[in-house]
Length: 151
Ligand SMILES: [Fe+2]
Picture 1 (cartoon, rainbow, N blue to C red):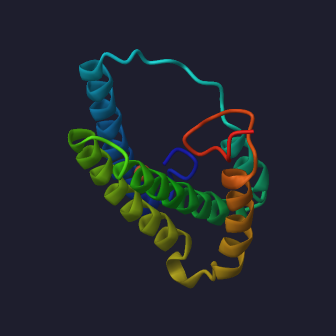
Picture 2 (cartoon, rainbow, N blue to C red; picture 1 turned 135 degrees about the vertical axis):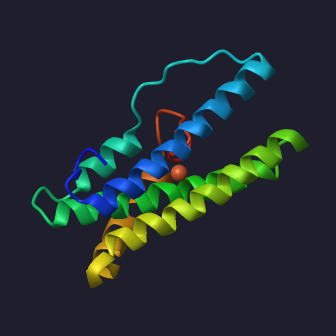
């Protein structure tokens, strides 16, 4: 939204997405409060930094890569939320199930935006997906939602 504000269609779709994500943030805050869990600030993850390093620097590649990374992050979130659903008690399971459905939808949106105007993305998506999968599955010193296996 802020990286490409001149792209009216993209910025508008990202604005709607941001509102939905902020609503999810508020719902998570409510869950934390009702469960008596205090919010704790975490250091940035290896995952996000690793994806950022994989981005191409020049346009239009950078824009495509940002959108494809968005799709991969959302798809990984879907996978992890879905994994939580079967292990959580009923009220939380339903909540995470609804978040998982949103993440799946967001993944599709990012991928469609990357491929907008007939831009071919399959090859680059496969390259970035390999980077992302390594980050999400390799041993990781920090335990995070998108981290790899605990080292
Ligand atoms: Fe999302």
